[in-house]
Length: 404
Image 1 (tube, rainbow, N blue to C red):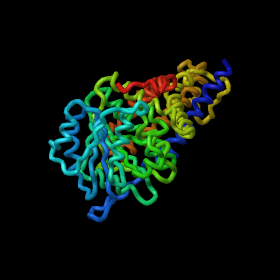
Image 2 (cartoon, rainbow, N blue to C red; image 1 turned 30 degrees about the horizontal axis):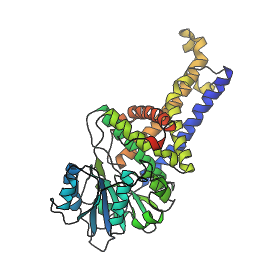
Image 3 (cartoon, rainbow, N blue to C red; image 1 turned 90 degrees about the vertical axis):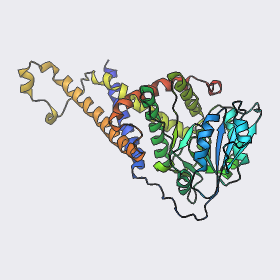
Image 4 (tube, rainbow, N blue to C red; image 1 turned 180 degrees about the vertical axis):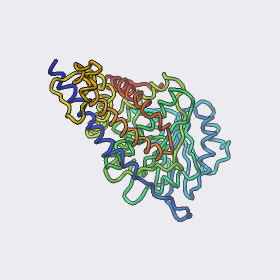
């Protein structure tokens, strides 16, 4: 028992210190970041090919393509990679029923045995692209302004090959939707902040820009073409370095997405997304694993540490409860235990308060994606998400994860 009196507090205090190092040393970088302003004048700008992979997305294409065509940018094209659709998408694109001027498409009739569908579709779309910069999104996404392209391009400064954008989910009045939006918010803070700390590790394919040359130089998805996921994060994990990635957080460049409606659909989606994490660089697996593990410990180690009574602990005199108060209430035997409880409570709430403040300020930078006052509540749920999906990811085979 004495062994645990040393081990449990050591693990808890170490986790708090590591968490504060991440929060104050990495996450705060987002607070001082400002995007480059876009050039409002129609000067010569690099050409952009928007690539959208679509499988039976006719109704979504009818909504998305007009929004893409309405972008205020002088030099861009829209390429739809129609992945064996049978809902009328092919005829819609073939006969240009929307009267589009900038839309072209590539029809995929069959899938090579060694390629997964999404990666093959994206590859064919990039192959057809004629512009120097690729901008990716999904058919069920919607840019929030007509300056999406322009704002993203403005971050593609000298020496940058990749721009990571933000794609929040639409609001719905449900607990699932709140958790989805908070998890997306947390993911964005992490990949934005780590990028600013010169440790980029992933991007989101719903809003992602990179140079076409980079795709071919790094052999596209060759190293993971058989995995269902990873067309965005695994590619960025391989192609990025500490200097060639920029971020774009301007609300004019946000791309809204439609969230899953049921827990089953969301769980399937998250298993697919998280399963590819095993293929990240060792540095990223260690840092992200440490971030997740210490977050779990801070939340779930609190009560076990709170209720132990280590005989080695003695509170400084200035921090003690006056003896006469304990005597008057017949609590003499509770004195040492009470001091320990107060210490652990103080440390826990100090960590939670600092985390809350930094996340709330980050939330403001990202156009108030979630309710700031609910952050502690959803952070606890997020810790549960970490625990459950972490175990699922560890014991799952990414090659056996199904699309739906």
